[in-house]
Image (cartoon, rainbow, N blue to C red; front, side):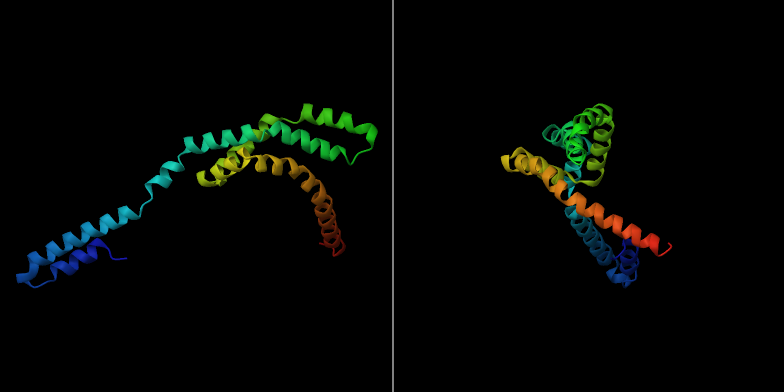
Length: 166
């Protein structure tokens, strides 16, 4: 990238007779350069990623995907692994004791921190559709299917590591 100072030094090195032309060329080039740089800036993206807009999208997402429902679904899935006589007690205890507001606050902050407004908009648009709601309702079954496999694999790796004395 050329710097203005370099261009200026180039222009004043011109012959005395061309000095005015060199400065005029420099001014024209500088103006064009600044205009091109400004046109490359995406001011709309900056406005879209404004904290207020992101916060509104995050709030809308959690209206569509309530954290208390996620907690209830998670408690039910965990309880399904317990003996039948302990399941209801476990679900009641978990839904009563888990601080949903704390988890939701952390989730909202993380969403706003890591997602762009376009990504948040895509999540919201998807969750507003019947397919989005249906897919989200099925996620608990998906998680229930894969979590035992993930847990088993992690436990095997940990056991292997411990057997190696590390």
